[in-house]
Image (cartoon, rainbow, N blue to C red; front, side, top):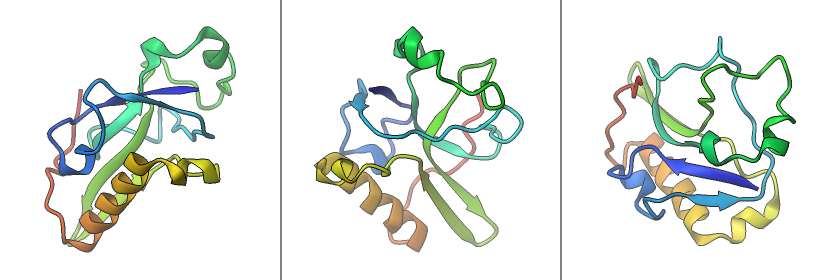
Length: 125
């Protein structure tokens, strides 16, 4: 059970989620400290590390454990003239029955296509 924080509640890509966040049961990929930074991407959602159980924190592999507890779940990024949408959830087919998740995916695709405008400036902490 992963508690998810809404990092940008004003983003149209997060309009389907409650601003307080949500919980999801799914495989969650995370980025090691050296490979992810908010200096490059606009974070939409992230693991609410403060609410993550001690048991789940103990499952973190040593090679991806971050000292800052900052694990992005979804983000957008402008790259040259292109746009990137990333969402780490979606490994368990059951998440596709969750309407907010599917709406988030659709909004991300629309952003990547250029059909949905959103603030994609880096969200450095």
